[in-house]
Every structure is written in structure tokens, then in C-alpha cells.
Image 1 (cartoon, helix red, strand yellow):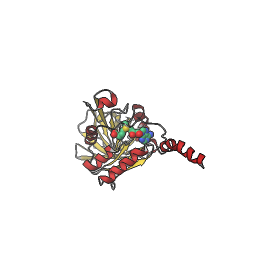
Image 2 (image 1 turned 180 degrees about the vertical axis):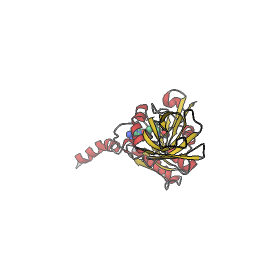
Image 3 (image 1 turned 90 degrees about the horizontal axis):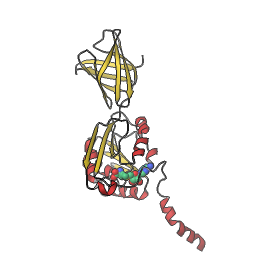
Image 4 (image 1 turned 90 degrees about the vertical axis):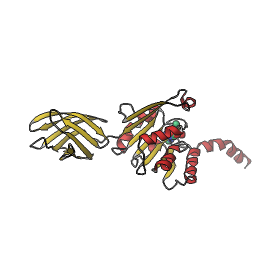
Amino acid sequence: MKFLSLLLLACAPLLAVSQDVSPVKDAGPYVPSPQSVVADMLRYADVSAKDYLIDLGSGDGRIVLTAAKVFGARGFGVEIKDELVKKSNEAAHKEGLADRVKFIKQDLFKTDMSQATVITMYLLPDTVNLLKDKFLAELRPGTRIVSHDYPLTGWIPEKYVQMDLEDKVQISGVTTTLIYLYVVPAKVQGRWSATLPASKQPAMLNLKQQLTRVSGSARLDGKEVPLEEVKLRGDRLTFRLSGRKGEYSGQVRGKTIEGVVDGKQPWSATLGG
Ligand SMILES: C[S@@+](CC[C@H](N)C(=O)[O-])C[C@H]1O[C@@H](n2cnc3c(N)ncnc32)[C@H](O)[C@@H]1O
């Protein structure tokens, strides 16, 4: 009996540690984003009461708590450290936010993100990049992703802000602070059968896509016409037909695009055909 109590005593620190989650990958130590950076991240992402925000590696919960308290959003944070999850949930209760936000002890690599309209993160650069495929697979077009300090390489940011902050010297040794805002693009790659005002016959749009970069051409009355000024922001696609008047804008909804030319004449396209 005495041996058992001694064993339990000896294992106490191990038992305490084992309450944390062992992640697929440790995405970085607990270093809180300065509160001014939190405010900027949420402002750049245009967070509002309509949003559902998920903070990946939520630390003391400050991003999710601020999103709820100041911007009226709902959401959750995931964190592997038991103590931090407890502290965050306590803060949510204390601040009367527990009906809108919660904190879950979970590995961010195993978290279902599909509910999010905004993702925030302050994680190591390799982790941020390991998440790219998961983002594309799970997040809806138009979902905003805000990253403190580290970019998603290969993705064109919607916004990119660099500033100097004294608070960051303790964290990274330099004052430089970066905030990247990305918008998850719709999937538009492929051949689309289209009805365009510029064509008497049914037309064809042939779109090539690399994340947010889209290029392509339209087949109009037997002629191949390159697309110009093609932009894809979330589910909004805009382009011009080379040598023709009018700006085409449309909303991508899965396998259909519906829109207007110069805000007036309707056009549409269906994937395939
Ligand atoms: C740099 S802190 C950021 C905290 C908070 N998001 C902020 O900006 O103030 C990163 C947090 O991620 C947590 N973390 C590391 N790997 C994780 C993983 N695989 N799943 C969930 N959380 C993780 C760490 O414990 C740490 O609290």
C-alpha cells in the first residue's frame, strides 16, 4: 500500500502532463498574441456577429473571447494544453460569453473546421503551411483566414500588413509584426457550358486555376477569346473578354455560376459539357 502511494506520488507530474493532448504535431509553444495584434487581426478579417470563428491553438483564448466580446461573433478555440483550455472556458463564463464561445482540448490537425467563416492562427511557419490542404478541403469559399506572422506560401493574401511593435521583442527578438489575410477561393477549374450575352450560340468557358490565380478563355461563336483581368475572391469571379466590352461578374455555387455583365445583362455557366 505504501509502495502504491509512493508510486502515485512519483507519477504525479507525469499524470499532470498526460492531461494535455499529444498532437500529431506540436504547432508551437504558448506565446500569446499582443492584444493590439488580436484587435487588428479581427478588424482586417471584418469579423462581425454573423461570423463563426475558430482559433487554431487558442492559448488563453484571447482571440475567440475578443471576437465574441467586441465583434459579437461565435466560435471556438482548440488547444492541447489542459490548463489553457480550462482558463479560457473560465474566462468565457466569467465574461458572460459561454453561450457563444467554447474551448476544446483537441489537436488542431484533427479539428473539423467546416463550420468556420473565419480562421485565426499564430503558429509555427511549417505548421501554417501543413494546414493548406486541410483548409482547401474543409473550408467554404469566402472563409477568411488570418495568420499572425507567418504566410501560407503560394497563396496570394487579400491583405498584408507589417508593423513594428515593442511587445514582440520578448517573443521573437524583433519588433516586426505581420498579419496576413486570405480568402478561401471557390473551385472553378474546368470547362463550363455558358450562356453569355457576347455569344449567339451556347459558349464554353475553359478555366485554369492555381488557388486564387485563374486564367482561361471563352469559346464564342466558334472563336477562342482569352479572358482578361480575371479575379477570384472567395466565390466571386470577375473577368473581361479580350477585345469586347463589359465586365463579367458572377457568384460560384458549386457547379454553377450566375452573374451579370456590367451589373445588367445576366450570364450563367454550368460545370461540364
Ligand atoms: C503561439 S500560441 C498562440 C495562442 C493564441 N492563438 C494567440 O494568438 O494568442 C500557439 C498555441 O498553440 C497550441 N498548440 C500547439 N500545437 C497544437 C496542436 N497540434 N493543436 C492544438 N493546439 C496546439 C500551443 O499550446 C499554444 O498555446
